[in-house]
Length: 228
Image (tube, rainbow, N blue to C red; front, side, top):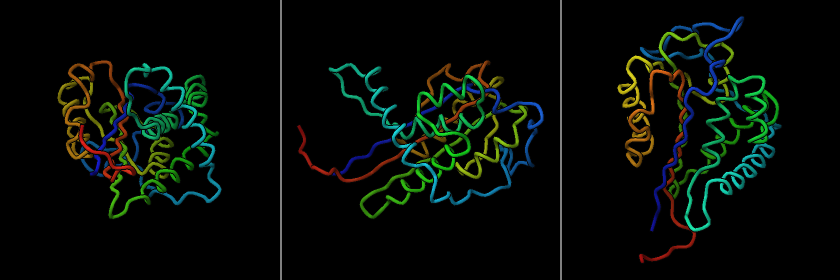
């Protein structure tokens, strides 16, 4: 008996600083395709000294606290702490001040840029877990309001450590069309296990930025059990 699980996590309009700024604000390099802003830099190989253990400890602590806060004792709860942390790590790259300090406190993130190097190494380790018996697919994506300036350092961090660029959509002018586009992307990444992640009205005229992380897992149970 096998199991197929798909976990999504998303953040909407979390950090405007990721899409605007002063000296580092730029429209980014030419789009690789229509509706996409990317850095020309490739994903890098993380250092062997990347503080992966520190990031894992922080994610573990977050997981226990998150479960304590949201899960009544009488109900089952399934979530992916790594998925949540990955989405917020991408947000962390565009945050500053109080917002960044709050994320550090919640997830135990090490200082910049160590947090991104560590997440890079962690996600590579998860990818290496794939085998004939295990399918584990982790995907990240960012969706920004069309025409909004994107900080070049932010694009470079996403590219070199998270392996992604930013899609652009008219989130504010065509909220429902944007919602459908993001839902289609999630459905594709999760093998249609999550056909409609964002409910109607979730993307709205105030939305400026959406971050999505998905995790798809297909594997055998370590301890097989029958149907009840």
